[in-house]
Amino acid sequence: MKNLIYRLRTVIRETDFALLLLCILTSAYGVVMVYSATRPDMLIEGGVISRDTRAMLIAVGAGLLMAIVISFIDYNIITKLYPAIAAVCIALMLLTLVFGVGPEERPDAKTWLKIGETGLFFQPSELLKIGFIISFGMHLELISDRISKPVHILFLCLHAAVPVGLVTLSGDMGSALVFVIIFAVMMFCAGVKLRYFALGAALAAAAAPVAWYYLFSATQKDRFLGLIYPDAYTDIMYQQNMGMRAIRSGGLTGKGLFSGPLTQTMNAIPEAENDMIFSCIGEELGFLGCAAALLLLLLIVARIMIVGKRSKYGATKLMCYGMAAMIAGQTVINVGMCLVLLPVIGITLPFFSAGGSSNLCIYIGIGLILSIYRFDKEKEVVNFRLSNITPFSNY
Image: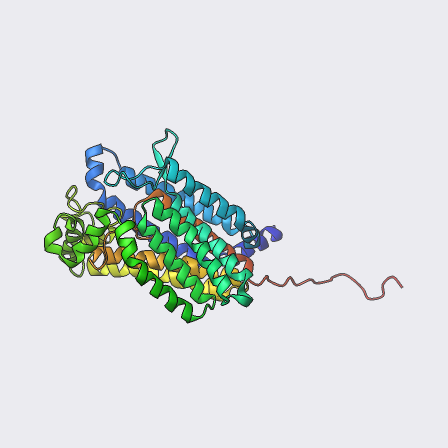
C-alpha cells in the first residue's frame, strides 16, 4: 500500500498540472463557444449538439488521452524516433497532394484526407507542425556548436522548405506562414546570428512579387487587396466585416452567452465556429470574454516556455519554444483576421476553433511538453534506512 501511495505521489509530482489544467479549461471555453456558434445548425438538424461541437468534444477527449499517454513516454525515445516521425508526416502530406480534398469554397485546394467511408476528414498539415517541431529541434541540437556556418544555415533552410513547400502546394498558405514563424523562432532561440535573419527578410521581400503572381490564387489576392480597398471588395470582405461588427456590438460584457444576434443568425458570420470564433466571443461575452480567452492562451504559451527554459537538453528546449511559437503565431494571425488587420488565410484559434485535426494534434504537442516536464524533473531521493541491525552482530 505504501509503495502504491509513493508511486501515485511521484506521478502527481512529475505531472505539469498547471499546463494540463490550463489546456482543459481553455478547451472547455472553446467547446462552449463552438456550441453557441453552431446552435442554428443544431436547431435545424434537430440534435442535442451540432456536428461540429460533437467532433470537437471527441477530438479534445482523444487528444487529452493521447497527451497523458505521451507524457509517460520518455522524451529521449521520442527524439530518437525523429526520422520516422518526420517520414510519416511527410508521407501523409504527399498522400494529401494526390488524394486530398478541399473545402467547398476552394475545390482547388487539397488540405484534407478522407478517412474511408466514415465521413471523417484529417488535415495532415496539423500533424506535420508537431513533426517539424520535433525534427527541427533535433537538427538544431545536432549542429549547435557550428550553427552559424553558412552551409548549416542552408541545410536548416532546406529542412524548413520541405513542410512549407508541401503545404503551399496543397493550397494552405496559412499553415505555410505558421511554419515560417516556427522556423524563425526556433532559429533565433538556437542562437543563429541576426545577420541571417536580415538576409532572409531581404530575400523574402525580393521574392514577394514572384509569390504574388505565381503562388497566390485570385481569391487570396482579393483578400489582401480588400484590406486596402474595402469598398471595392465588399463581397470578399463580408466575412471579416460581419465579424468585426459582431465584436464592436459586444461592448464590455457582450450580449450574453447564446444571445448574440449575429452569431445566432444562420450564416450571418460565415465560419463563426472556425476562423471567426473570436468574433463570436466578442459579440456574446464582450471585451472581457475576449480578454479572458487571450489571457488563457498567453498563460499556456508562458507555461510552455517555462518548461523549455527549465529543460536540460537543448533539443527539448527548442521544441518547447517551437510549440509556444505555433500557438502564439496562430493566435496573432487569427485575431488579426477577426480585427480586419490581416487577410483571412484559414488559421484556427488554438483550443477555441472547431476542427478535429487541429484540436487533436495540438494535444499531441502538449503531450510532448508534458513528457519533457516529467522526465526533466529531478527525481526524489529515496531515503533508505537500515533497521533492526545490530553493529557487528555476526561477530
